[in-house]
Amino acid sequence: MTSATTAGRRRWAPYLLLAPMVVWLLAFFLSPLVTLVMGSLQSGSFQEGFVFTFEVANYVHVVTTYWPWFLRSVAFAAIATVCALLIAYPLAYMIVFKSGRWKYLLLVLVVAPLFASFLVRTLAWTTILADQGVVVGALRTVGLLGPDQWLLATPVSVIAGLTYNFLPFMALPIFVSLDRIDRRLIEAAGDLYASGFRAFRRVTLPLSLPGIAAGTLLVFIPAAGDFVNAQLLGSVDTQMIGNVIDSQYLRALDYPTASAISVTLIVLIIGLVALSLRRARTDELF
Amino acid sequence: MDASNARTARPLHYSAARERAAAFFGRHAIRVIGALAVVYLLLPIAVVVLMSLNDPAGRYNFTFNAFTLDNWANMCGPYGLCESVLLSLQIALAAAAAATVIGVLAAYALTRFDFAGRATANVLVLLPMTMPEVVLGASLLTLYVNAGIPLGPVAILLAHIMFCISFVIIVVKARLAMLDSRLLEAATDLYANPWRAFRRVTLPLAAPGILAGAVLAFALSFDDFIITNFNSGSAMTFPMYVWGAAKRGVPPQVNVVATLIFLVVMSLAVTMSIVTTVRARRAR
Image (cartoon, rainbow over all chains, first blue to last red; front, side, top):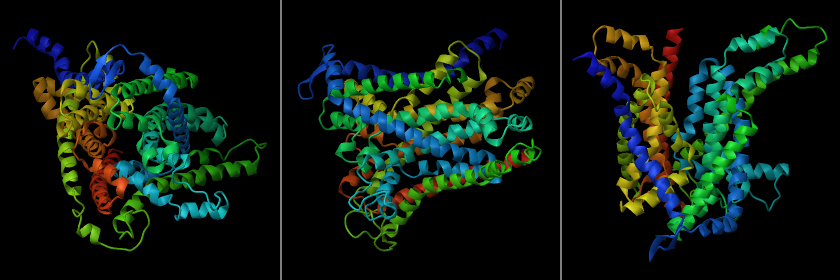
């Protein structure tokens, strides 16, 4: 073998190794997105077939009809993201700084819910939040819930379900970013007479921002598109845009409308994510 | 040990009470909050296990009625349940195998080579993870309908391989990035060709990462509902079974299956974490 052919092989090797991945994602990720966008501009019916007519009116219809569902999805997802952050940050902090040799075991416990079936663990919340259950009983005793109030089939249970289901995706990136922090930086802050809280606010927190940003994306995006929690824990009044996409595709068989909703959802999510990342001024961290 | 020791020497004007309160919060509150969070994460799992031992009073397995082992003894009782588990296992095994092969090759290229287009490839890998699953599933449905690919097990498998690839690549890449590149150089110096160096050095060292990626892909595929929902046609995977049953009352055997899967994957994960802990301690 001459060195010329080795160098040639070396040059082509990465492309050959990448080829299966690229081909697969082109075929089953990018090209479906193209058919989705094309489909959103079609008109017709399922029975008579859909034709491409550059039907921009689909989008007008979608936005004017379904804006409450979009709004509710964004609101639920945003609240769930904040709740997840408030729970996951102390949790990740404890695991990194306070758990000693239990670190990896605790980490496994954090991802444990992902190993219990998504639908089954969501259904478990119907037992926990049931009207005769312990949680509702306790809240009624304390007076936070009236005797004729309940949790299931309310926005509270849907948001609780979203928070619960996507919590590990918030905790893991925060764990990673906290774990990477050089402990000497925090010690240095202490040596320079920073109180524990001040050291946290000026050193630990800023250094964990990339984890918070990643966690926010990993929770907000799936939560905004979710329809399982709204279906299993909610009611007709708590339906999210995912429920509409599901029913338009699989029951109404109105593909153009359903596709236009999906495309609008992608655009909305990308817009919100770009906006919030810029607002949080975390872009220089990536 | 932690920052609290460094805090003993401190200017006099510093309020001692505030100091003590802060120290207490630093020492205990975070543990209490963390422990509560762990309870929050594990509570539903405990409920799933508990309800697998329930003899429900009616059609709905929502409140605990009476203890029984019948559901465990008679796991395949409900019509179609075990068939759905079997189909999910088959799809998950095939998806994990294919995604692992495709993912390991790509991860190797992305960590060990410098080439034009590497940044683009890295972005491409992350893109599917930035899309809500409902959009991935819906767009695949439009593709299948347009291309005349019938909905069913094959359509599900193609979709699952797609979303598993990204996860495998991320996990394996993290592992490959940790490897000491001098080991590979040593192999090359000792006249190993690239393939031999890959097979004898990289592959064994990256094995834990590859295994973790494969297990993750398996778990993701087995548990996927949202994408499968759009591509399944009449095929019934385990999550599709649960979804259908949720409308008329989920049989307690579903909790048995969920408990079993949880125990299997969990013991795998705990074993891996123990190995990691032991290795980390040894390395120290």
